[in-house]
Structure formats: structure tokens, C-alpha cells
Image 1: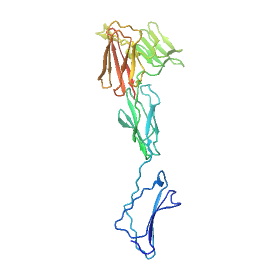
Image 2: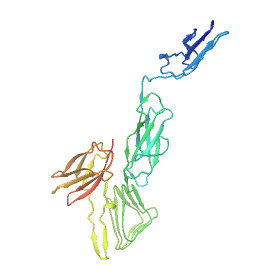
Image 3: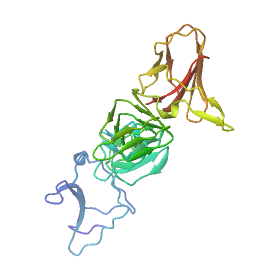
Image 4: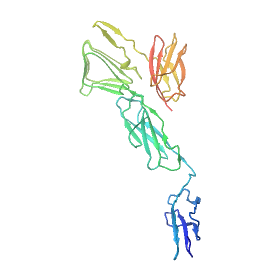
Length: 341
């Protein structure tokens, strides 16, 4: 309600109140209630904005102001994204692995939610460390604190862990073998050395399988009647695939037929397409191939006839770990392949 020489002025500042720009001045009484709305293009992209209302009058009346709203739209948006990587993959059983998230347009206070097999784990951090098991699927969801963004929250790529039960390096120190044992390592087996011993007693049998090398150092002893066999097998098969003796009633022995890795698959991991190739094995009978997902469900099956290699596709199937079973009748084996996004 106006009075002689009274006025109400609405202004804005874009420098935190150092200087002011007038938006509107009211000098006459208005209907009650009256509304006022205006678009201020000069405020776009400004971060130090203030508004003020001034009523000026001598022997004046009043200016009542309420229901103030400041709204806006984004002129541009920034895409939010996040990707993760493992410190190592594959790893041996019991090996801690650190996963690191790399974020784009995450803001000053982003929120990270890590997931293992789609179960929330960890804390609000750009890194997560734990001991994975074979087939674990790790991902991360990022919620950005920045305004004017798109794709928020963002979900990372998935990392499928391959955890080998066979250690990378095996040290055999102060070991006395009296029965039958098998020792294996993905890379190196170090036997005895540095004042330690490794002894194979008479009647004992030891097999050693390494992916790269076996170091027999001073202190390695095979007594009369003992047996020690060491050999290199890049990629295996390791001890778990070796022939096993099963004793029946103390005398009869049944020897199990071992699985042989007579084929290979590549590339591994794969985004979808991969090749199965037989390793120098010429099939004279049909070769059955079956591919199973982690639930044990058969995803693909086919029979190869007079083929040394065959192209397969996991396109359209979920990312994760798959088991490949190959059986030719006279040969059988299994392998794993990882499908990634």
C-alpha cells in the first residue's frame, strides 16, 4: 500500500552484494494479493547471487512479501560416468584386490556404492578392497553432487574376478614327504634353499607342476625308493586335474581317467565373440561342446564334425563367468571364459 513518496524496490546482485541491479520498483498500491514473476537471463551461470527487497517511505504504509521462489533450468548438462579397474585379475585364492573408481563430473561430495554380485558392500569411497572368490562380479554406482548433469546416478562397468586355487608362487621349506603328494604353482615352485630342506622318503611319490619354472635348491633330497617328478605346464592342468588312485579293499586299484586340456579358447575375456581351437588334436569322432552359465544352466550346445576350430558368440547373454565342457568320446576337458560388457 503506497503513500506519498513511498516505494518498494526489488534488486539482485551477482557479486555477493557488492553492487546491485534494480529489477522492479513499485510506487503505487497493488491489488492484494499481487504476483510478480520475471526471468533474469543475467543470472545464468552465476554462483554469488543475492536478492533484496527495500521499502522506502516517510509516514508511509507497508509492503508485505511472501511465497518467494527462485527457479531455473540448465542451459547445458554435463554427463556423469564412472569406470572401475582391479589392481590384479586373475589372482590366487586369499589375495586382497583393490578396485579403484575413476569418475567424471562427480562434484565435490560424490557418493560411491560398491556392489559384489549385486549386493551393496564397502563404504563411500572411490576404492574398495577385499578378497574375492572365483566368479565374483564387482561394480560401482556413483551419485554426483553436481547440478545440471545427466546420467546421474551412473553405473560402472563390471569386473568379473578369476580366482585360481593354484598359487602364483609356492615355497616348499622344511617339508618331509612320506606318502603321495602333488605341489603346483601358476608361476614358480621354489624347493628348499636358505638352510631349509625338502625330503622325499623311500616309498613316497611327489609330483611338481609349475607354469614357468621349478627351482631345486640345496636341501632337496630324494631317498632311495622315493620318486620326484617335476615338469612345466603353462596354464596347467595342475594337481587337481591329475590322475588319482582309488584303493578298494586294500588291494584293487581303480585309476580315474584325467581330464585333458586339449583345446583353447580366445580371446579371454571376450566382449561376445570367441574361438575354440583344438590343440593339435585331429578329431575322428564328433566333438560335443556345451557352455554353461554360473547357475549351471546350459546356454549354448553344439557338435563339431571335422572341425579343428569353431567360432562361438555370447552376444545377448549376460556378462559373467561361463564354463565350457568339451567331449569327443576319447577326450574330455573343461575351461572357463569371461564375458565382459
